[in-house]
Length: 619
Image (cartoon, rainbow, N blue to C red; front, side, top):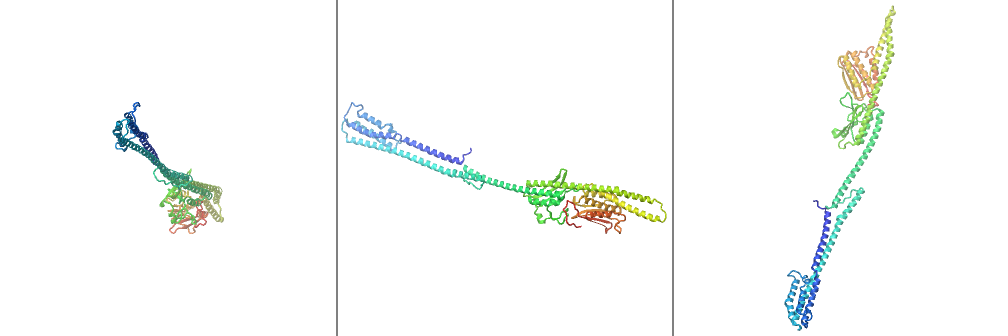
């Protein structure tokens, strides 16, 4: 069974004390009043006994009157004794045998029975009262007076006791009431005032007020609950303020990030430069969100692993970088060691760069493990990945369109050349053949044959050069990238050579524009064709590498080498290769190698829109 609370217990104690005081006061008052009940009558009757004794004495001394009923002394004595033993008197006498009042009453009764009554009854009627009789009567009356005095004192004592009990009860009741008011003030009123003031302070968002109530009663428990509630409200309020502040800062960051994404998206789609458009924006986003480094990987069908295309922090110049004057992503080792990467307790978020047509790449975002990544930051990065996906997809679409346009233009040029110049040259060759069949005699035959020979040689060279041009214009990239087209070319010439042609390819994806890819592939094909047809080579090795900021293509064979003039007779392939190199803004060197054979080296700086444009290029 659950016990009552301390405050209820105190109130119950006070009520019980008041009730008990009242009951004790009423009980004692009732007992005392009961004990003195009939004392006044007893005192009156006892006082009448004195007069009755003298009346008996006077009757005994008076003349005898037999006509008066009950006039004899014996009958009067009986009446007197009945008054002496009346219950109204005996009830006022204590029942205790050793009580003084009881002893006095017994002494009076005995004196009456043994001395006074016999004397009165034996006294002759009408005879004068003797001195002894008078003395006995006076002695008896004195004893009755003493009994009356004792009754009066006893009654007064009881009345005094009753007054004392009333005073004590009143004083005790007053003390209880005072203690109750003091307790109520200290244990109820003051705590209530504190609790009310705390409630008002909490309503005014002041959570510093505390009740600090001592004890175990309800108000102390309520005060403790108020203190705990105030502390929890203060903590909750501070948390809410902190969350509101954090949300505000997050919204401000989100707003700034959205503005940055908006400006950067325009920059991405305007200048068609992934690295130049993405790196500054990503670095600003890192500072804004407290993340980084951020890396962008593109998926290449020819590579098993994604190829890094953009990074915001690197200690070494990235492989794909072609501008040695740009240090946007380069940081010192000390700064790099502070970045939250895997070795420095960082966490990585991978976001797919995806379009409905497929996966284009992956955005790798590093962030501190202790701070985490907010939902707002994650949404912003997802928006960024969508923008990058759109930009990359559009760039690839533009590249493919440019390749298609370039191929169509070259096809048109090849058709025009074939339909006009090629037919004209064929016609001239037929005319030369007809002239050879003419029978010309005499001295003119020698000069005539010489002229025909020169015409035939010129026409054959022009026709051969035209066929090379037609082959060049009809060449198109029907593969997704230069690497695949180059491998197919190597397979083609390996079959023609009868032995595998060596290949070393190390180029970033989409490093060259469609026009640069076409010219580079054609120069390599022309070099391979020369090595197979004219050099009598048995081993050929092709190498194309990206040595930032240059692209270097090399074709080397172990053939017979170039003639002393450097250019084979009636062969215009090298001239066309030189023209292509100049179109690329590069340089072509063709020379005999010290170990034998010919080495063709092409070097140029790409002008692809995917890479940072350079103001000065070195060869």
